[in-house]
Length: 174
Image (tube, rainbow, N blue to C red; front, side, top):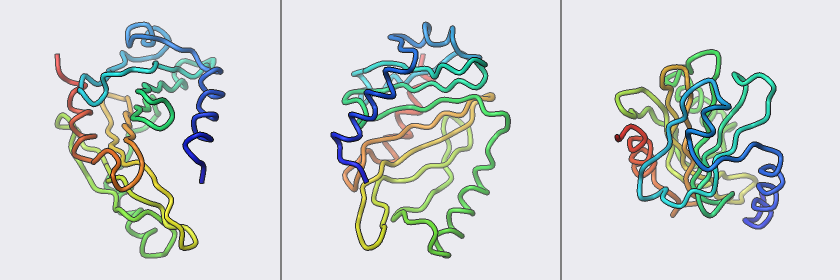
């Protein structure tokens, strides 16, 4: 697992190879959908909105990154061809846990964001060869062809699933 500094270095290299925008409106011009962004106090310090440079705009992903970049909260947004089966994903994670494949200490659960089905997980650790490696919690949902996933900060004191759902809900505020 990488240190915070190594993660920051990788992020800076990656970010330098993407389109970078300051507003959702600017980024939306390069995407096949209008980008929603959080309006939560937990996401007040926007570091930037990044869009991958795929030739086909339907294959581009957007990343809404908050301070501190690389180790703070971020939103991944993509336009996949099919709606995920969230219940099947939760069931698969349960089976993987029983089989010893999944190394996470927290289960995936079904959640609701703005009346839309999704999945989420509390922050915590991946347990690999007896070592604990911090990982973020997340919430993911499908909205009219767009898949949003919000990742929080890492570790047992990372951004809680309830906070992540609140951030997600803020994307629908006027």
